[in-house]
Length: 131
Image (cartoon, rainbow, N blue to C red; front, side):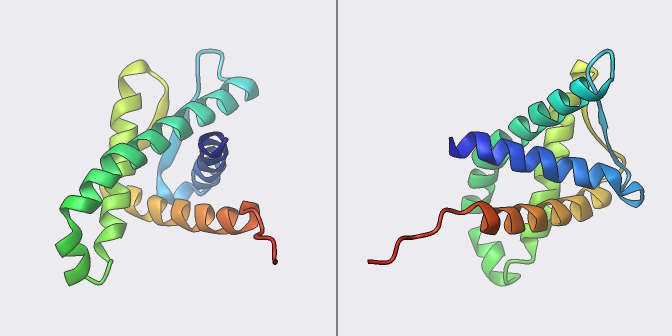
């Protein structure tokens, strides 16, 4: 259930990022390219992004831990941009998916996605019961 929620939040965040034309990040929908196909494409890209973030992101964060300490965590912006760029690279060969015009626009888009994920995580986090 947590993975499905994460995919839905990622899809929403990706949709918001594609609405900002200055970021030059876009989604190419499945064949007929209507609303349903756009939503399904956003969910598919959100799932790919969640898997990339979980698998590759975890490995990068473990390996680059000393760099995180030296930069006080600022390298995380570059890592998140790299993960978004990898997601675009994975979905490109199929003719649908995420398109990022430039790596640095991907870094800015990843920051926006991280902020949206943070806010949605606070809203959707289950409340702890007080005993």
